[in-house]
Image: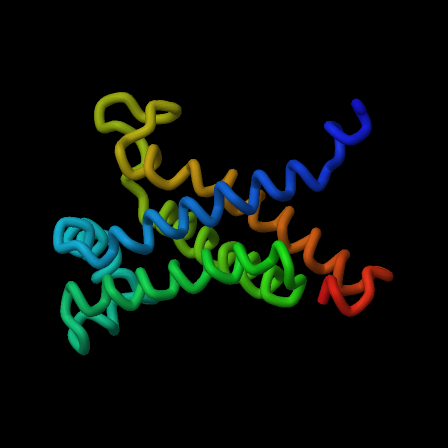
Length: 156
């Protein structure tokens, strides 16, 4: 009984479910005006996203980001039955969190007047993404293991 409870696949399923929830909720939010404005404050001057704003505007750029997040979440969810989809989704998730963590290099991480280690709002928003990056990495490893292993066609 205890061996069934300690099965590492339960941890993988929990990671998958939590990441799907996160990508679903954040992806949906991007379609709302309040979230589009919030994202624009950070993203419109960032080299990776700045080009979208003159072309699609604030809401259009946010919609594009939200669509990518929803696709990522769907692929991570599909990873429960398809290692290929799961690997692609996990890699997209890793890319997402690497991008958000790269905002850390912009500065403004420490509360003015306090400095390190007192986090300002930006750091509080970004640093949690290190754990989410690690969770996506764990799912990528699981999917790659399933693809390379002797799991047969059903796991691919």
